[in-house]
Length: 213
Length: 307
Ligand code: SF4
Ligand code: SF4
Image 1 (cartoon, rainbow over the protein chains, first blue to last red):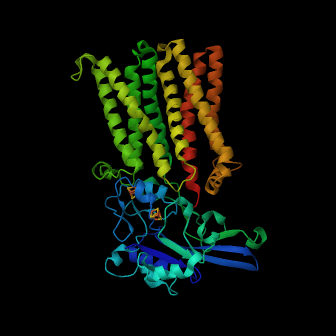
Image 2 (image 1 turned 90 degrees about the horizontal axis):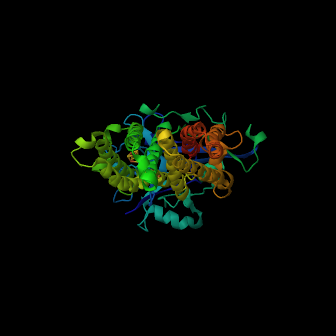
Image 3 (image 1 turned 60 degrees about the horizontal axis):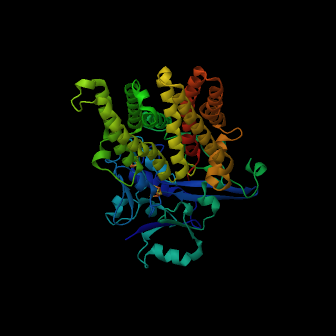
């Protein structure tokens, strides 16, 4: 079994339901996120468009975070999920430096690394990840990539050329795909982060939690 | 005012989480800097032993003590940088051998252990229980410790290479930079420690190592500075922080001048004038500048948004 995600960006409307569901399900502390939806505005007024991209851990087949972790706190489980053992983690932040997708954060409460686990605890009880359940438009497709009859496999086959991963040049082989994505969705360097352009807040940088502050 | 400022092909992030601050900051800089001096001194002691062992007589004890202290500073900052420092023992009980962090922690621990034995031998001398001839045993052990110092100084380059997210840190270059940092700071440290105990010929020898290490490291940095941005998008974006009015441009150039350019000039002047104070100044600048150089290179790739 190899579990994977596919986000259909044609469907995503940026409601952030998945983001909230994830926060609640996994009790993700303030100022940290396992999953978030990024908005990027493209174009010149009045020809503008707002894009939405849910971003989470890609559960890479060749995961740099797993490779660099000195104590195997990050490890693969049988269903292909890259999981984390917070009791084992020493908080070296090697994984934070290694993950090309910025998917890992240091939990300010436990002072250990954490990230999206594809809701491994729910899957163990035959439930779908919280974000999949919460999405009102079914934009998150989750399932076994090795089963040709699974929803995700069918979706990938039907989408054919329109299936992409983030930063394929890193050789990580993500188990997380997107359809309907452009460079602006997947490449963080394709958009600018300019002071004063963020909706709702003006915070651009967060201090690190814990004793490193 | 997006419509007034940007072309249609450009894009602006309008809602996202804040970017995390720098994870590996000056604690890690201290770690790399202290390790360079600690291992570099061992390299230089070994070279001195091969070249003219009679000049080692007054240097064995101070050099091994300084190296040992620097290696302990390195270990201390490694520990302090952990968010869960009391779990450090996990590295030894649950080692994950694909990680350069694990391999490095083991090698550095063995290295420091051997240095402790060498130091104890030199301090206890005749009263040492391990050996009857402390100096001879020290010199024998020095060979093995020098061999071990090579991977100990290199493993941080391995960690940087495993940091897949940070495109700037390329493996062959970082390995060479780690070795050059060790030869630069090691030669500087032995010049300072040796003082008048070193003959003019030996001083010339270490001055050459200092000057050449500075030159080679400077060439590598300049190669990256000029050509690095011609191949990879992420490297281009990272180097922007040290170019023009980039956030770290001033600090980058302070580091290059203090660690490399000024020591190179001073070493050249020393060779002409034979003035010991010029050489001492070159050595002090190289050691101080290395910290700045390492810090800038450590921090700039962490400023880039990853997602
Ligand atoms: S996306 Fe990052 S955290 Fe997730 S498996 Fe890949 S490297 Fe690890
Ligand atoms: S922070 Fe924890 S999970 Fe990440 S590499 Fe270090 S020990 Fe492993």
